[in-house]
Image 1 (cartoon, helix red, strand yellow):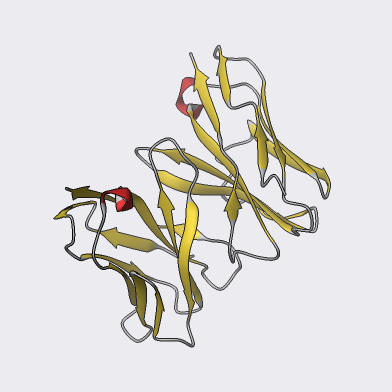
Image 2 (spheres, chains in turn red, green):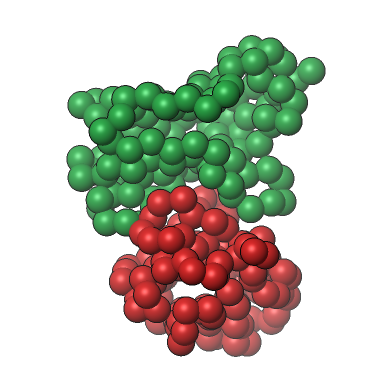
Length: 113
Length: 111
């Protein structure tokens, strides 16, 4: 298995633009998590899905952020409009079920200018 | 909700020495406590985990201990090597299947 696949690896955009981050979990994994990592705030859980259903989105910072999981093999995290303070590394992770033994993707380095 | 505190934030040791990183958690419902290692520019990777019904777990040079009464758990690395240099994160699940991470410990192992 190729592991958790995220795209793009790097994204540079201007303030106000829409940003879409993509994730393909490991085949057979039922849970998917989106984390954001910054020096100041560390690894923050944004949202997690179980069997494609959003279970907890309490970590989503504001209405500018939205996430979807239309099927078991694909998820997106969208920021619209983007702001400079959204600059961070966004990680997607998946597991067989729940929070145990998460496998992380390589992350998307987002820079909003 | 769960809150995980981790210390120290940085740790410097000589090669061959032991390193200990400690974490405390707030939610008594937590029952799963993993440790992740993140090398510079890479993804976090699970190195060891422990469930609340176990007090200690060992895997070669790495061990984790858990004190549920005191709500703290620790990572122990023996015979440290330069390749152990990384940021280490502890986490707790808060009993709700979602991992809340500590702030991380930057470990530097000097030859």
